[in-house]
Image (cartoon, rainbow, N blue to C red):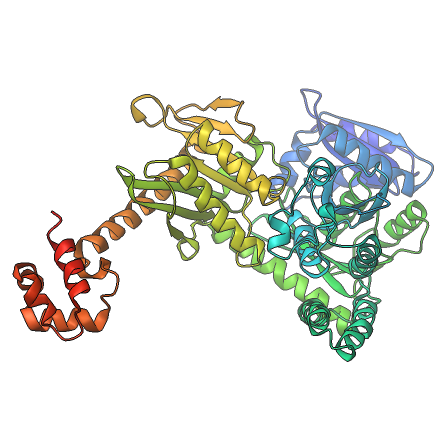
Length: 608
C-alpha cells in the first residue's frame, strides 16, 4: 500500500455514512466495511498501527479503495451485508449458514390434516410452526406430538390407499384416520390440542385433557381415562425438562466465545417458555475481532440475511454489539415491532445467557480438542451428498453367516470423534431363510429403528449399508414403512471387482445413481473404515453364536429336558458320553425320565 497516495485519497473523502470496498492488485475485493463517517474510517486504516499479522497483511494488500455514499448509516449497514454476500471477501468474517430453517407443517385438509417436517419456502396452504434451530429440534417436537396426539404423518398418496392400519398405528403413533378408526370430530380436537402445544400453551392443553379424563373416570371408562392420563403425564414430563421460565417467554439467546483464532456462537431459541434447541456456528477470526465486534457481525448476518424472517422482540446477548442501537432500529423497521438487544440480563434471563456462554465455551474447546480428521471427513461427506444438515452420526449395517447358518446382523455407530462403541448393537436373525441377505438386512434395520420410533435411541443423519442395489432397495422400503425415509439419508457401499479396496461403488437411496470415488478420496476412506468396522463386528457376533452352539449340550435341544433332568442324567451316567452309551432301558431308569423321554434322548444323541 502506497501510504502517501492513500493519505491524499482519504483527504478527499466525505464525512457522510457509506460503504467502502478494498481491492488487491488482482482487482479482487478483499474487504467490505460500513462507516458512519467514511473519511475517518478509511483514514484509520492508513494512520493506525496494526498489532495483528492478519490486519497488517490486509492493509499491505490494499491496491485501491472504492466507496459508496448512502443516505444513512442504516442504509450503509444493509448495503454492506449484500456486498459481503456477493463478493465473499477474504478478510471479512462470514458465519456461513446457507441452509433453510426447518418447520413443522400442518396441511390445509378439511378432514384429517397431516403434520410433517418441512424445509423450504412457505408457499403451501396450511399452518407452519417454527422456525426451529435444527432438524433434530423440529423432529424431537414432531415425535412428541405423534406420541401424545397421534396425528398422521404419512403423505396423501399413502393415506388414501390404505385398507388396513400401518405400522405407526401398531406402535401407538397414529390414530389410523385412513381406515376410519377415529372420527373427524375427535381428530379435529387432537389437532387443536397439538396446535396449542406447538405454540407453547402447555397449561391450556393439560387443562383441556384433565376434564375429559375425570369425566371418563366418573363414567367407569377406565381405558379412555388412562389414555388422557398418559397424555397429561407425558406433557408434564416434557414441561418439567424443557420449561425455562414463564410460559410467555419469547426470546433468542446469543453468546459468543473465541479462542486460538476460532470463534463460536451459540443461539438458543426460547418460545412459549420452552427451549426449542440451539444452533452452533464456528468461524475462523480474520483480524483479531473483539467479542463485541463478533456479536455485531453475527447479528447482522443472522437476522438481516435471507433465512430468518421471524424473531422475538427480545434478543439477550453475552456481549453488546458495536452497532447495538442501529441494529435495533433496522430490525424494528424490518419486522414492524419493537426489537430490543439486551446485553446485561439479570435473573432468569441472566441464567440463560450464562448457559449459552458455557455451551459456546464447551463447544469450542471440544472442537479444538477433537479429532479433526473425522470432523473434516464428515464435513466433506455432507457436502458430497448435498445434505443440508451437517452429518454428525452415521449408523452402518452388515450381515454375517456361514453357509446361511447362525446369521447375525450388526450396527456400528460413528460420530465426530469416531466410533461410539457403547452404541453398537448385534441382532440374531430369526425366521429368515438361510443365506437370504436381503431379508436378514430388512429384519435388522426394522428391529433397530422400531426401537428408535418408540423413543429408545437416537436417529442418525446417515444410514450406511454394506451392500449393493438389492440391499439398498429393501432397506429403503423398511425406512418408508417406518416413515423415516425423509428423516435420514440412505447410502450403500458395494465392494468392487475381486473385492478390491478402492474400487467400491456408492449407491444412493433411489438405487439408480451409482458413484465411484478416487482411491485417495477422504470420503471413500471414511466409508471404508465404517464398513469394515461393521463387518468386523458382525463376524465377531457370528463367531460367538457358533461357539455357543458348539459348546451347547445336545440335551438342551430336547423338548421336556430342563435343567434339573439334565443334571440327573449327567450325575447318573457321569457325562454326555455315558448318556450316549446308555440303552433305552437304562435311560428310563433315571428318576424323572419316562419311556417317551428316553426315546427322545436316545434318538437325538444317535442321529449322527
